[in-house]
Length: 199
Image (cartoon, rainbow, N blue to C red; front, side):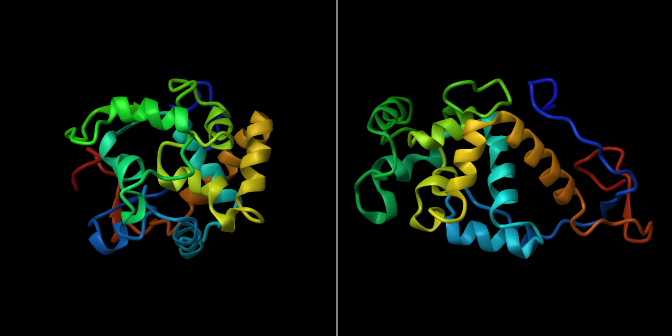
């Protein structure tokens, strides 16, 4: 998918099996679009990923795709229960999103995660974060959270300045993520014929 949209390629290791069950508790450990940087870093460490480079590189997948208004409504109208917008949102971008996601809307309208080149896998997700145009709170936290100053913000800066650096880090992080708790024992997993269902 990424190569067809202009992104990097990488070698996918073979032999991994799909599990027989889904685990609701484990799914709760995945990063949330509402997570602050501290929680994001903790979730990446717990998944045996690097909480700086892997976190920023894999978040860069948001250079591609769309998301519903419901995931930005609080940032626009009631950030952290203040009845005010998220101060890290660019005023112009906030105005644009408010028109797309009205206060009393149903929250289902789709918006580009990357407002500049939404159908291309490139570094523009990071250039958007540089000017406070990250759609999700979890995205903008990588640049704007006070904790980001000595941790993730310099990596955002590096990737915003070098697509090659981003692509290389993204491919490496995808390989690392693909190696988390690999199932190879046929008594514990299978190759599914349909991804959503156990055979």
